[in-house]
Image (cartoon, rainbow, N blue to C red; front, side, top):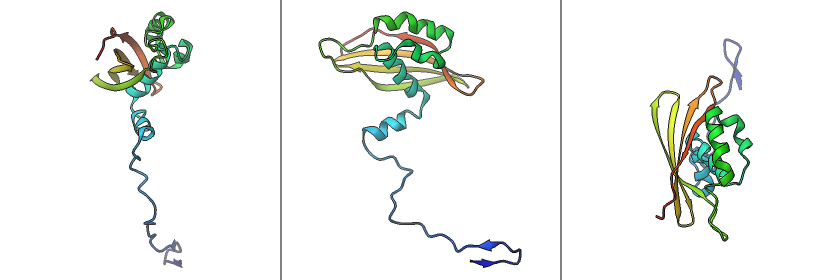
Length: 148
């Protein structure tokens, strides 16, 4: 290093290490896809609603993430665990796909396809961007089960 006229130090330009892999590109595989999906509020909420409505988590687990009307809907739906696996030893339900529509800024209307074995169910929910800059669920609806 050497000093310039202003007295500040200058370092030679850094050479990138060519042995490193590109860390900006997600690795292939289910874990990488899951991390990529969870960056989207719709997938993050779809997973949590699935865990609640399949009986894997208690309703109060959604307290900080659901507004009053949505929480009331969850307390009505959750006791029956409508997204639970089919007995006996049915497959654990998973979010197959989740899409969204943004009717206006700060609002997401999302819909997810929930698969459990050969059963497919629809889950629709509304997210609102609250003044504290967090997304919260404001409505939840379930569609009937059907065979694919």
